[in-house]
Image 1 (cartoon, helix red, strand yellow):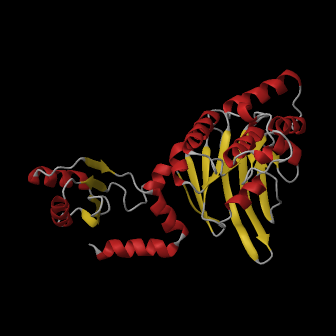
Image 2 (image 1 turned 60 degrees about the horizontal axis):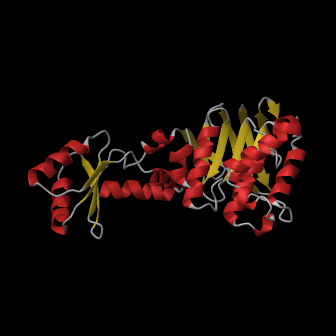
Image 3 (image 1 turned 135 degrees about the horizontal axis):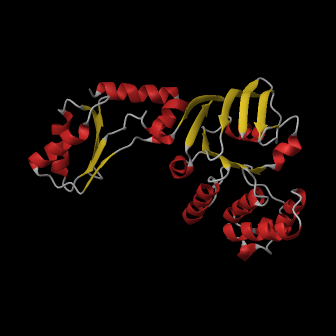
Amino acid sequence: MITIKNLSKRYGDKLAVNDLTFSVAPGEVLGFLGANGAGKSTTMRMIAGFISPSAGQVSVCGHDIEKAPVQAKSCMGYLPEGAPCYGEMTVGEFLDFVSDVRGLSGELRRQRRAVVIDRLGLAPVVDQVVETLSKGFRRRVGLAQALIHDPQVLILDEPTDGLDPNQKHEVRRLINELSKDKLVIVSTHILEEVHEVCTRAIIIANGRIVADETPTALEARSRYHHAVSLRFEKADELAAARREITLLAEVAAIESNERELRLTAIPKAGANVLSAVGAIIAKFDWDVPELHLESGRLDEVFRSLTEPSVGKGIEQSAAAEL
């Protein structure tokens, strides 16, 4: 439903987006990740037809966003970064305005208006002027306008920005529900959001794609993939565990936090640390209230891909502890 080919955007001498090519299929929730200035929002704006590319092509639902913009935008809902609205309107007036723009009328208009007000919890503020709303409510109004015409494609730029934890949970739940019959692209810098809602993640750095995988596959790149993390009750047991576990042939490195009495055993590539660590715990009969096998740390993978110097530092640190 969305196809991007050789997409680029240049601002003077700066190449903000550099030759991106990817496609997104129905039922996918694509997380679009990158550091500030990486080109995330610029790419989202080009997909949505908000700005024109310097080169390349975007097709949405079979419609070229440059050659057939009205047809492409009619099947798309777009939440821009910052969720700009007409501040002088009430929430109800703004939703009516968007309904007019989208060509909604009659029973369908009333039905869709009621649905978005209910699903996004806007009933308490429907008669309130937009500029007087909290940042969280303005974000929800932005989501409502993107959903009001029940689009096939959703382009969401930082959809949970400014929301409290409960509101974030509700929006993520809504995205999961919508993904059953829609294509969703979510631009975010909140890595936990990738775990919560995304079936696939693209990471960009300096305007180029540096990874395109499932969240699970990205986590498997982490040096913490299959690492064993433990928490102890006593400082002397933590110190003893560090000495003993460091000697294991399967262990590449040890990290410990004396204040929290935590230890992480990082495995060598392909090694099984869990069974060896478990055997040592049983041997010394240590009190270990917490022990878990890590799937990997997405934040570490993100840093290693977007900041090469960080990745080199991680590799050098691991090598030094071998």
